[in-house]
Image (cartoon, rainbow, N blue to C red):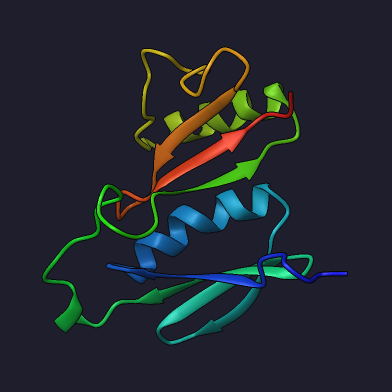
Length: 132
């Protein structure tokens, strides 16, 4: 039964090309597969859930996204293990992607919450969490 599970998430982004480069490798590392692609968007799918990225129209880009405003704060994904979190953390560093809360990493979410926190090109916070 899929009732209640997320069907899809659609995120409007300021620069589709930049977001696709950021999210593509990460989502595919997490088991998602490319799903749909069109001029102003692209999506990846895992099981019955997909994530869509759509280019925001220029007329709506006057107020930039900020995760502390009303709306989405962050997306959190399951990792396979602590080692998986560490591997992704190293890949993020290699790619020059900003890691958040470095002073508390990998326990920024608490002593029993092994995770890495980072930002996408629009500064949407992303979290990858190891199982307890």
